[in-house]
Length: 200
Image 1 (cartoon, one colour):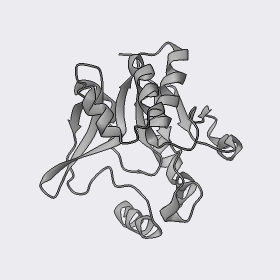
Image 2 (cartoon, helix red, strand yellow):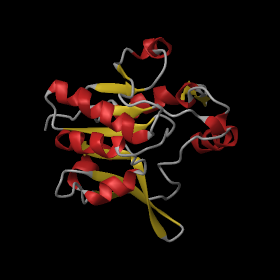
Image 3 (cartoon, rainbow, N blue to C red):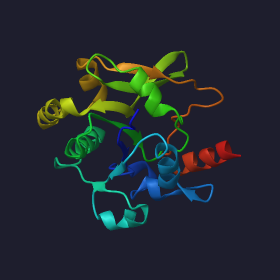
Image 4 (cartoon, helix red, strand yellow):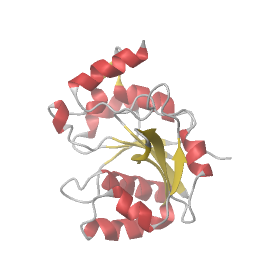
């Protein structure tokens, strides 16, 4: 099976980290973005990065940098849309997304999202959290065929990912959270310390 394109979502403002690019912060002597590329690269091809501002700061990654096509940073769905537009130009049918601040996500993410796809071709990752299933909407399978619908929804003010994905009956790929949640993401300096403990 031909791998799907992968898009790393790094368009956030990292306000809880004091601003800047979370993906460029180091965990265990290695940048978060490098850890994410190393995990997603074997699962998806080609890869691209969704980020806003000067793309030169990611030049060493040698990846296409896709800026949001909508103004005012409307959130992760804008990054998904940028990825879908890029994939459409490649002739791809779908993309897999991963967040740039999540260094431990599963190495079988793409395969299991594909297996869990709902009737529209959408799927989101999820893991147990305190007795309930927590969806992780920045980790998903997104069909190119829905990109115009997504653009209209964003232009209409939609910001919450799961409202849109529920509308299109997204499937759910459930991953275990033992010994820890693989979708642990780095939002604060304390999270960097926690991630480093998980590496040991």
